[in-house]
Length: 236
Figure (cartoon, rainbow, N blue to C red):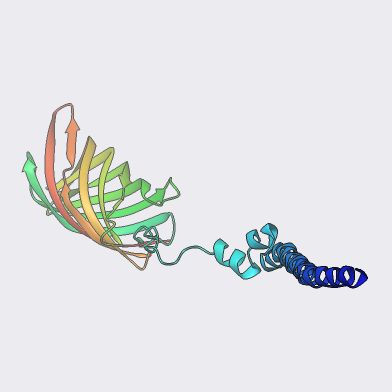
């Protein structure tokens, strides 16, 4: 009887030992899987950079972002206005000479103009004039003392070239000598004119008037001349 009991207990022990081993190995496998599951997020967290590290660009990237994009079309720079020859100063003096054709109630004469002017504007283009004039012919002539105004209009495409209208008015004395006698006649005068000149290196003037129409008048009548004048002068 006792032997049977011992045999049964031995058989039961043999049957239970594999079950316990299997349970222990199962527990060991389950513990390993849980340990791997716990360490995997930590590895991922260590591998992934922090949001601040991803957002902050490198100093070189920041400097490059501030530089203008040179791949686009170049910007056009505004063209400078064309340069014009400046004059040496506000004063000018010119010498003019040419024919004075009698157009009405007058004979043909020669004409000389001693022209002085001062620019009243800083651009040196608006002149107050004192153009002392002489007209001469055989047997007589005229002395003309006017004041006037002239404005120089620069031609931008031709630096140094100017067109100018001018107007003068004043007093004229015609002197006639005949048979040993000298007689003077007194007139008022007005002269519209238009001309052109070239200013060389800002100082030297070369030009003249293609239209000069002196009109002399008095209570007894009027006389009219048409003049063509060439001129040279200086600015200072």
